[in-house]
Image 1 (cartoon, helix red, strand yellow):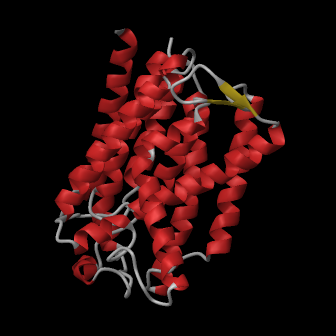
Image 2 (cartoon, helix red, strand yellow; image 1 turned 180 degrees about the vertical axis):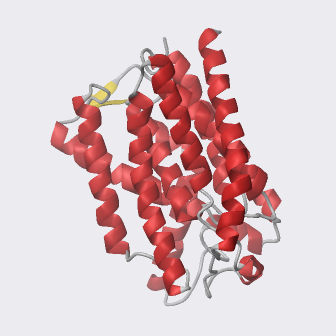
Length: 329
């Protein structure tokens, strides 16, 4: 009960700080004319969103930093700061991407090779740090069993780096409808918070996840449809780093298959669409990719897309928690 109270306090702090920061940061973004550009080949009905302030992810990045720092001071546990640092590096890459878009006044930022190399470097450094601080082993816990698959460290390092980069970009791809990425990530953070209570010596990670849950609820005050601010790549890449960073910090990378089901479906829809389009010289499987745009084309409102996708995320998270119940004390 005491641990649950600590997590609840972290969530409340994250919510309050993000909601408060939004009151100051969003007007500042408007004043600085930090407005979102909409792709010409994107959904035509999104053109009305042109100029909406972006980089709003700064609110929950700062608030989650405060949660991590206060937890370290309060409990003497600095582990959450390591995950924050990892996510923050990705947030910085996102910031550079957002800045490049604003400078060029179009929805094209850093080049794909530049982003990939920066993200790969961050993933490798984080994996090495987790290994040498004792939070990571090359044993993959098999879902729904007590078994694990031992991998040689070099193989595991390559696996980890690629999964991290893929996960971060999948979360980024999901950020295409008002409140979607924030809402889908809420049950993911709740799952990580619950694992912090259930897995030995991981309460700090659970506390930070609970704090980030509160941050996202606070951000949704401004980000729900019609959005007053977008998180930008600054926020979505930070969230991607948090999602995969916590999975590896818990030493449960395969948990991402479950908690990341929406991110995976969004990414697969994009890959399938592009591959099929090129192979058939112009034919499409989806009305528009990624997947959330397909359902918008089918007539779903943004609110319906967010509600259904979040429910799917909830189901995936429940299955993920059950799949790894063998490691819960």
